[in-house]
Image 1 (tube, rainbow, N blue to C red):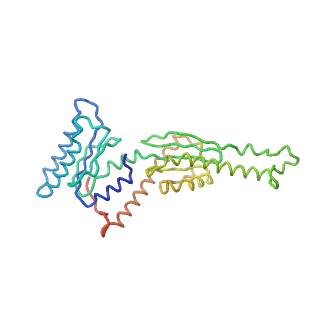
Image 2 (image 1 turned 120 degrees about the horizontal axis):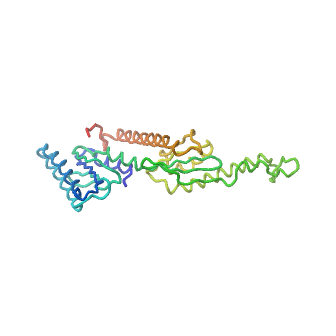
Image 3 (image 1 turned 90 degrees about the vertical axis):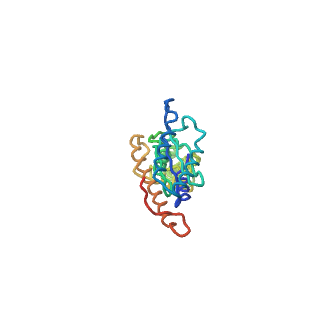
Length: 294
């Protein structure tokens, strides 16, 4: 599955040149309609070609020939739920199935039409949510509109277990460590257990964080901050904290927050890409600043 980062690279590569974009709805099961996708695609291609003349028509025909050759092996149903193709007169930049429903759409213009694919990628993009305090942590995953709890972790020692440290000793003012009061011992052990819990959660999450994963952390400020510091090298600007969240929230309470956070993180990253394109437009860059009708 493509990532949004890879899609951004494709966008830059194709910017400024004529591109044949084709989206194909492939989520079909009726045997009598096993080739209907091809008829719909051909109708869209014919509709465009009829309105072209001269060199533009030749360029389109070259791109169409490449697309049709790429799809030729698929005689019946297309695999997957949808397909997308970006084709120039010289090459097939992308032609692949997409694990999400796609609309039927054919366009010939400068640059690729990315909207439907970007929306599908956002739905597929995982959002990890971690709720953590000094005692426990919960990990939930949001993908394709569903939030599910994956696992939970607990600190080895609860602060409640420390109130009677050395209570059997006369005066009850000192712990077993020289010069350390019982309250100091409780604070030290509390801190050590929180740090251990953070390390455990961070180690478990690292293999799950790739270039497309968003991360939301909630809980107590100290635990949130420590976990963010541990994961920042991997998650970077795809991670955010929300101190309004707490470890006892239900998935139903969390889901609206996760959805809003995912949208905001995606928006911020898209704005960053727009700024990058603007800064690189013209000159030797491949930025392209104008609007298209989809």
